[in-house]
Length: 482
Image 1 (cartoon, rainbow, N blue to C red):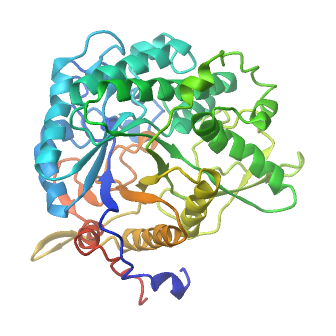
Image 2 (image 1 turned 60 degrees about the horizontal axis):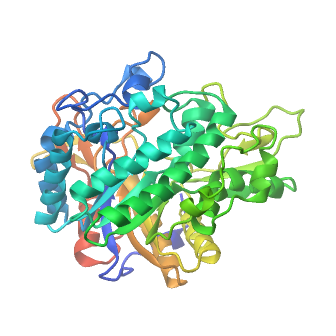
Image 3 (image 1 turned 90 degrees about the horizontal axis):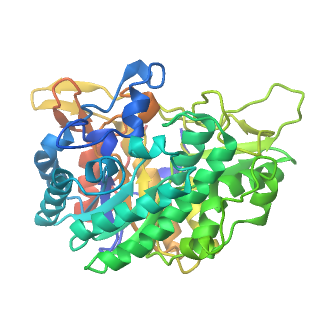
């Protein structure tokens, strides 16, 4: 249980320009995997491969949002969401990842954006949330340079179609996951375990971002905000070897993306640490200038912290980095770093709950990049929700999730009071959904989804968020008096 002082922050007021909403991702909610011309993605292939996803779950149906989008938008309006961060499925727009666009796919997202605007909800569109068209993976995937050029073309075509209405474009969601979990550890699609490929993917994802930013600015007619979303690692130490371990993981996890994107360079220590894995010859003259494009806002995803130290090579080695290991390492060049168990409490994912880590992260980003506005694009928690039936209907009393949100919104508020230019907060996730390798076993939603009937139930956390948006004041945690 956190100290009582953590619960004294209710009533904190957020300014009217601070945009509060929620977020989802295409493969996790849409379903309709084979409808209206959509091509297969790497997550279709991966989830249909035996042993890759819990219980053999797939995103074939998911939350059926593709057919239920209008009622889902009504639900967002009922909650008073000011913004909705969604992702566009590349294989709906270009089934094979290149060439002509699919009119039915464009029409779906056009209806979605129009529906958001009609309800007064700001559209925040992410171009890539991990569902790479399978044809591009077959041609080499993100370790191949051509994928970056194909992504730029996709960005241009999508901006041509929707760029008069989308308020904020996000190029990539969590390229760390795409590169290191997809090509390093094999825990995510496409399931490859090759450290050199993972590092090549890092660079080509960075290049894809820079090229896409330029296309979005050329093709979008409404002068939108342009961004990228990174899942930052808040790294802590355990002993006198931890500073070196922290430096290595910070280079791979954070600075491999922030430095080329925001400073136009790869950190020298990153190149030195990984010299035994790759020679970085995939970085060509002019690439860093292409990557280093001004962005209007930096998306920040935060869930938990990690604690590291250097392994002594003798004692049993801990690798508890919070990600399911499937044979490879997500940390090329840093296999001698130990990830230690974190102190609780924990979410249902086994991730530690550390609101102070969010405050620490926001202040660190302010110090490193003082002129860069920030937006929390994901923060939330999975818990083992229980549905109760009352005379008034079905309820989900998710007190732990509400408490989690109270404490993290309070941490964000503290950072703002210390000068962080934080523009908004998107709660993950609007709906329970397909949680990647965990299938449907983990529920992050503030709205419960019955996967058999597709019934939606507003959890107490959704009602809490509605009150926060309506009043601009942080409601109390239900655990405050316990």
